[in-house]
Image (cartoon, rainbow, N blue to C red):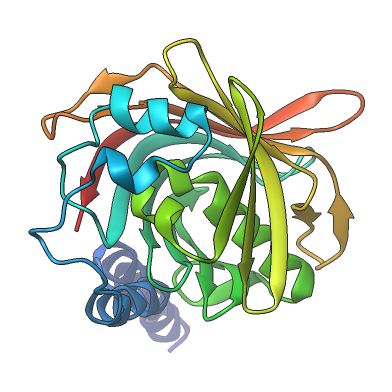
Length: 285
C-alpha cells in the first residue's frame, strides 16, 4: 500500500513538472496578451498621417538649427510621415537597480504620435523560469509590471511619479519618430548649436530635458531631472537620467539610425547603466 501511494505521488509530481514545462514553453502569457491587445488598439486609433504625406524642409523651418540639420542630414526629408515607430532589441544587458538582479532581455517597444503613448515588452528568464515585464505609458498613466512564471506578479509600479517618468521616456525617444516633433504638445528652445531643450505637456503633466547632437547632427544624448527611480516597493527618488545613443548606420529605409542605446542613472557617486542594448530593428507605420 505504501509503495502504491509513493508511486502515485511520484506520478503526480512528474505530471505537474511536465505541465510546468509545457506552460513555460508555449508562447502565450497573460501579460504578453495584454501588451498585444493594447498595441492592436493603438494601431487603429493612432492614424494621423496618410502614407502619401512626407517630410519637407518647410515642416521644420521654425525649429532650432540642430533639429533642422538632424532631419536633413539623417535622411528624413522626402520620407513618409509616420504614425508610430517599432523598435526591437535583443540580448540587452539589463539591471533592476544597483542592488537588483542582472538579466539578459529581449525588448520590443512601440511609440505612438497622435496621443503620446509608449508600450514595451520585456522577455527574459530568471533561474530558467520565464520572466516578462510590461512598461507602458497609456492615456496619461505610466506603469511597469513584472511577472515570473507567467502568473506571479513580482512588482506592479504605478502612480504620479511613474506617470512623469514614462512621459520623460517618451520625450527621450521622440527623435526616433520625428512626427512627434511636429505636434502641439511639444516645444523646443535652442540652447546652442548642438543643444536643444525640449518640453512636452500631456494629460496635465509637463516634463523637459536636453538633447545633445554631435558635429554630424546625430542625436547622441538626452538628459533630464524629471524622471524618478521607482523602486520595486514603489518609492521614488529623483536622480538625473540620461539616454545615450550612437553608432549610427543607414538602414534599408535610407534613414541614418542609431544602433546602440543606453539608459543611465547619473548618481552623484557613479553613472549606473541599467539598460545597454543594440537596436536590431526600427520600422515605421
